[in-house]
Structure formats: structure tokens, C-alpha cells
Length: 111
Image (cartoon, rainbow, N blue to C red; front, side, top):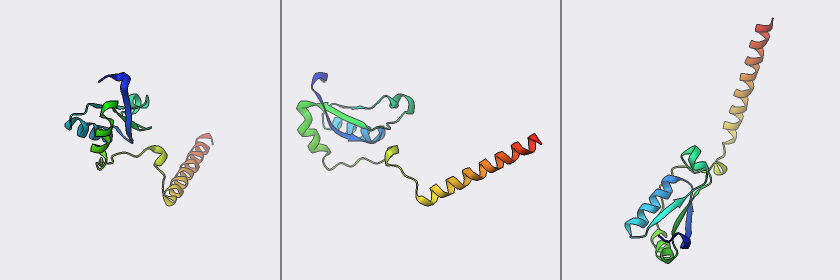
């Protein structure tokens, strides 16, 4: 591939989803690769998403091939993740209980 003419055709939320799209494109004769961020090195997965890159000459065909393809979702970005209200409440209660127990233990050790 001529790297000076690469373009982004879509973005997905994980490496696994990116690999699925790349596989479909390569099965149709279109060389493709994913471009992630620096966090890939540390987390072994993408926190910020993965760009799917192809040669500019393959853009239209790539978009057509991927138009109806839906990758299996395996990971959500952290910014898309939110705890349900009940789970947040339980988490705060547990944290409070742990702190109270810790303070009580420290008090017992001191006295």
C-alpha cells in the first residue's frame, strides 16, 4: 500500500472489531489495517477507538463492502460506560463501610 494515500473509512471501538472489518476487506482483496492510539501498548486494547485505514483508491469499494456488515461488539469505550444508579449507591455504601471498619481498626490498634 502506498502509505501517502491512506485514508480512514470508519472507526470502531475495539481491536477485535477492527480485526473483523480488516478480515472482511482482505477477503475481498482490499489491503487494510487499523490505526489505534498509544494506549494500545499499555492496555492491549483500544480505549479511544480504532481507525480502519485503506488506500484512497479502494475507498468506495471498501465503504460498499462494509455498508451492511456489523462487527461483533466486544468492548465499550469507557466514556460510553455508566454504572446503573443502584449499583453506584451500593458501591458508595460499601466504600463507606470499608472506611468505617478501617478507622475502627486503627482506633483499636492505637488504644
